[in-house]
Amino acid sequence: MSFLGLGGKPSGAAGAISRSKIESAETEIDTVADLFNRLIESCHKKCIQGYQEGDLSKQEGLCLDRCVYKYFEVNAKVGELMQSMGQQQFQNR
Amino acid sequence: MTKIRKEFRHPVLQMMGISRLRVPSRNWLIFWGVTGTLVGSYYLDRRQRQLIRESYIKQVEYLGKQTLQPLGGFQKVKVYVAPPPNDFLDPSLSEFRNYIKPILNAAAIDHELITEERQGYIRSTIAEEIRQLRKSQNENSDINPTGESNEDNNREYTGTLIIGRGAFKEYINGIQEGWLGPIERPAEVQEKVDAAAAVEKERLRKRHEKNAEDTEGKDQMKYDTEKEYEEDKLATLHRKYPVVPAYINAKDLSEAELPELFESTPQMPIQVYRLPHLLGILSVPTRIYRWLNERYLADEIGQQTVNVIFNKKRPFELTDADLAKSDEEDWPTKFKQNGIDSNSEWMQDLVVDPRIAKHLEVFE
Image 1 (cartoon, rainbow over the protein chains, first blue to last red):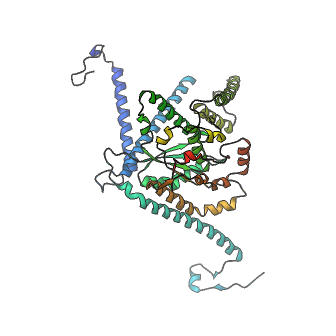
Image 2: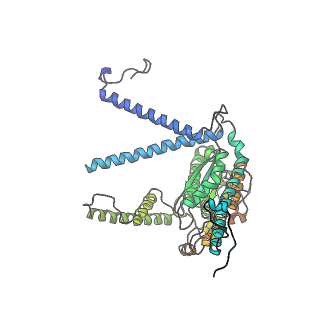
Image 3: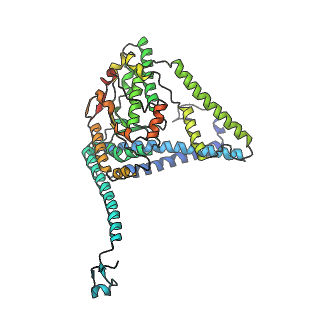
């Protein structure tokens, strides 16, 4: 893929990008965007106390820090669990 | 027994469906008296506790309300939490959550919780950290004598909070073991670790055989009882992060040589919290008393936490080895006896080496 015309062509022919690849890339973008939207929504709800001040206070900053960290941590854990469950189902079949 | 009790009748009340008003009987008076006292003192206590907590939060709140600087980090404290004897982590954690965390949060101080169910883990991790530091120092000194690498090891942390007497003992012992013990693992410790691993392996092998016998069952991981499952969980943990026995005996500490590096390494000031936690049916009255007087604990812990935030500290004195000693009175006698029999580190007297104590600091 090229980046603003730089970076040259990949080794394969440019026209050979398969449809399934594009589809999987699209779903990936969707999941990531969804993850971020949810993350922002819940952490905003939890941490931002209001807009009386223009800037973030230290309390809010710390809260956001921990919230984002926790969100990704939980996300990874759930992902792991789902994967192992999927595998088990696959084996049982 | 028919005493004539005073009663009050009035046509207006009667019209509202209340035929008479009178003092309730003796038994009812006792019932309402006892219930009312208990409920009342419970609400009083929780209300006072809340107010005390809020007053400490107000003291430190201005720190948290400051504007966050774009590149500014947060102060951070490490919190070591060990479960009280014969119980799970929950009481220790709820003490942290109820009394300490709200104040830290208000002051925007980050914390890192280090919790462990198994005895000796806190000691062995701390000792291992120090040994790693010493090792890297030894390697560095060959190439680069200034050795600045140990500087940033503790930079972002401003203190260490320790909840409970047991965790305190492990912490101090871990520091002593790390600095005064050998860097490389002694042979007898390795033997113990290997022996523990062998026992574990044997157990697992048996489990596998047993599983293989009843493969007809659909679940591969089958547990007969809940307890077995719990044990297996602990065993898994153990395989991942084994608790390594101490590299040095407590009685050899005073003869061991203190590396020079110790002087130049910054030591975190520590704060030790009491963890009053009673078990057992016979102690129910004391437990009720404590349950109705939690505000005093909240006050004590709140003050200690505020001192951490304002960095009020003093040098460690040898008498500080008795910090939070009152916890030991709460420990179950059976646990204590077992501890003495098996030479557990929780039951040994805490002896702090004067050379190490000289360099430590505690919060007020």
